Image 1 (tube, rainbow, N blue to C red):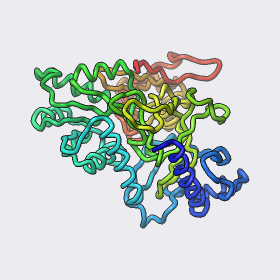
Image 2: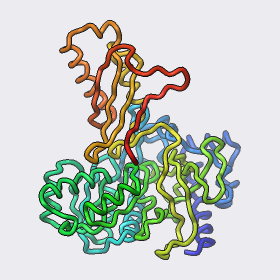
Image 3: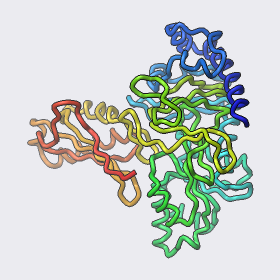
Image 4: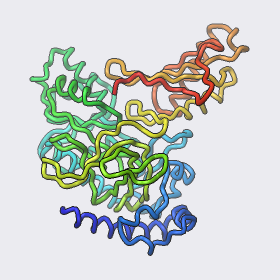
Amino acid sequence: MDRSELIKLQSERLVKLVENVYNNVPPYRKKMDDAGVRPEDIKGVEDITKLPFTYKTDLRDNYPFGLFAVPMDKINRIHASSGTTGKQTVVGYTSEDLDVWTDCISRGLVSCGIEPGDMVHVAYGYGLFTGGLGVHDGATKLGCSVVPASSGNTARQVTLIEDFKPDAICCTPSYALFLGEELHKKGHTADDISLKVGIFGAEPWSEAMRTELEKSLGIKACDIYGLSEIMGPGVACECEERKGMHLQEDHFLVEVIDPETGEHVKEGESGELVFTTLTKQGLPLIRYRTKDISRVIYDKCACGRTTARILKPSGRSDDMLIIRGVNVFPSQVETVLMEFSETSPYYMIYVDRQNNHDTMEVKVEMNEAFFSDKISDINSLEARLKARLNSIIGLSIGVTLVEPGSLPRFEGKSKHVVDNRKI
């Protein structure tokens, strides 16, 4: 589509979106009233900056369904992702939303070279996480044979790849590397592994990792981008040129802002990505601040597609970590630690990548009174801390209790995270 035609379409959809949320989502109506904005003030995309931002805290404050724009009997599916306080960020989809999501995923699969009739091995997690079911439905719509392997049980995954000989795999990049290692241990080489294409997302990964993935599995490795709040995977996806992820601009309006001022940066400059969902019915969001730092380029891609492209996010403007596809906030860890009287307020989080798996360890100081207790008591407390963190965050996390005064102290802003991953 010509860009002028696309902007016209986006403008028409934005006007309808603003009217819809004003009339049907009380928290949005209040935000707009507080900002002095009425639906009739929005004539097109050029008026987007008149509208207030939406933050993850808005979803948390209106948990679970307070931002939904339709009655619950119109919601066909609910997904959720980790939130900062242990409360999950809940998203709802109407049947029309699911159709749009499926189309977006299908577009992404096609752009990466997957065709109808190909077999697609899906090793993203199924369940509340959007990855597994999202990719599954998109591949089904395209006419692929889908293997819903889900995550984990690596030995079974390897057997499925050996026996079924899929053409494509969709999972986190770190897990794909691990699968490659296990296949090589069984005597396979990149030449005899059936996979041709890999679509990887849900965690940051580098060009160096792309090279390693392609060498290990004999594939063309492509990146996919999405947030559960906006839709899930498929908001943007690379093509075979792999020079940025094509944004589905008929459904999502992107802005790039200075994270400090909230003002637009110049075209092509780096900043925080902000999305407006132009067609979502269940949970429409206006100017949602993602905290992802990236650039958007608008020149026509060599593949022929005219949509804008998002470059790999270079970081985040907040302290969120992405560990094996799960959002983790240091504040979540701190909240759990404060529940235990035996520990002090001093802790450190160490993130690393070992054997192509992200690892996370929490070191926390014991208080003076507990430090003198038996070793068995210390081991018991570590186990209880680990179980509690796992239940809140949804990951298996290492926990080590250390003696009082052994962790760093900071005179200014405290630093609680050491991320040793090379991404």
